Amino acid sequence: MATFFYRSFLILFSIFIIIYLFDFLKIKNVRPDIVLIIVIYIAYRKGAFSGEITGFFAGLAEDFIYSTLFGAYSFSKFITGYITGKIITNFIIDNFFVQFFIILIVTLINNIIFMSAILVFTNVSFVDYLGSVFWLKIIYTSVVGVFLWYLLEYFEKRTGGI
Image 1 (cartoon, helix red, strand yellow):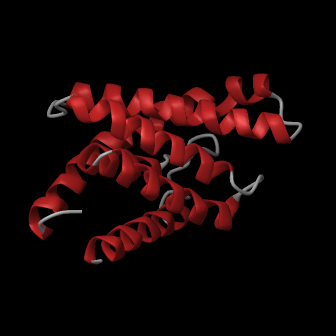
Image 2: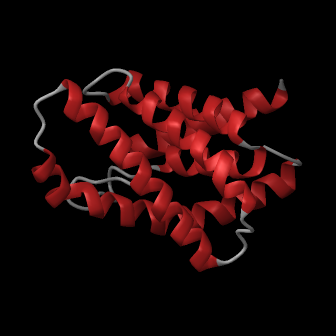
């Protein structure tokens, strides 16, 4: 039960950070997806079930705050948490470049799932999204993700788990 409250606090705190702190650090109106990095980290540490549950509730919180299509964030983070927990737990991620590459690939998968959901239900142009913010968001999240990964590892060692 303590891990549930810890994860909930971590997700809500990261959404608060995204809204207020990273509003100043936008690059072409793009913020890094800190919530996705937390989902990746928990899925890597705890497995597919924890990853999908964390991803669903983290995405649901994002849907409540800023969603153009309710459920798109929860769907994409749910699938991403599951895939990450199933596949990436087989790797040892202790290197900066491996962390960057894993976060890059998972962010790419998450954005493809999210954009697929948006394209099915809205009139958003995929070409415009792909050309404007798609790659910037993936790279920005991956760079910030590596540093956040080390911070999450530090907190996990200090508190005894996530």
